[in-house]
Length: 426
Ligand code: SAM
Image (cartoon, rainbow, N blue to C red; front, side):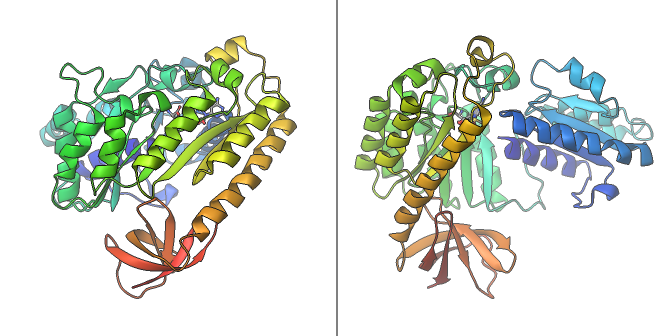
């Protein structure tokens, strides 16, 4: 979601004549887009912010914009006080505070053209790429902003605000514009992406959106994330199975495999219900890959409860498991009412245990592709190798002198590991 927000802001700024630089010292404007989902992410953001102070002292005209969940939809006066060298504070997904600041910048605010450019950008209903702009091969489109679910551990609802679905036509227009400007794959985003449309008057849903977007002629691939087990309808699963452009790849977090912990997390499903859903997805979507998220060390997680989660992973053999150690987040139900009673070293031990298990599982699953043909959409280069993804979202590297950027090509896999594969163009 942050990558998408940063991308949209970059597009907006390019319309005002800004260009991206990799050299921090060269920049006139720095935007630090922050995540606070775990304490470690927040610490990283604070560290970066502190390091920008000396740059601002050397270059007082530099504009520093702090954006995202560290600010949140309700603002963060403590952070504003602590970092007075920041010029603009913006909530997640909202470029307007920065645009308003830039509109008033000395030397520019007198220009009619400058102000009218900013006004027209602020009036835009959706992010429209510039005519000469070339987009990434795979672009993210947020379709549901915020979240109203209130899982006990999660800070997102208080930082990104309540769930709001973007209008159907805006998404279709944006998607069409992205594809016209070179994007080959679109990834539809939402904290619970399968709740798309429930808050809109015409009640469109993710399934109808996938059908509609599949009709964009030059679009090659569609994905969506993240799903919640309670909101994945049969219609949605069938749409993934039926629509050739929708990739057989689902991200549906379990978070835990123990019913007491799931209840305490306020996830509102049981481990058995989760298992049945995974079975149903596998029965209906051929060759599907499934990713999950797991939190270890949630308050009250006994060794037995942890072992239930481990068993879930061992039984279900997911393609990917994004593992996290529980970190109490301010104003969440868990931080307020549940003691963070699993010691840090024990959280780490459990994390490592699952990491080792998942590495074995992912190694085994990926090794089945060895020697086989898979279709790869190439997104760029990492060092000397081309990097792309297959329909299952597996990372594939290929050596080639050709320019493969944006091409979808058949690759024969010659090596597989737990996190990536290597192959040759066929
Ligand atoms: N909306 C999705 C969901 O809840 O399933 C993803 C939300 S979050 C951006 C990504 C992951 O961060 C979650 O799935 C969860 O595993 C992890 N996470 C969220 N809050 C956490 C916390 N307080 N401590 C540790 N991990 C956390």
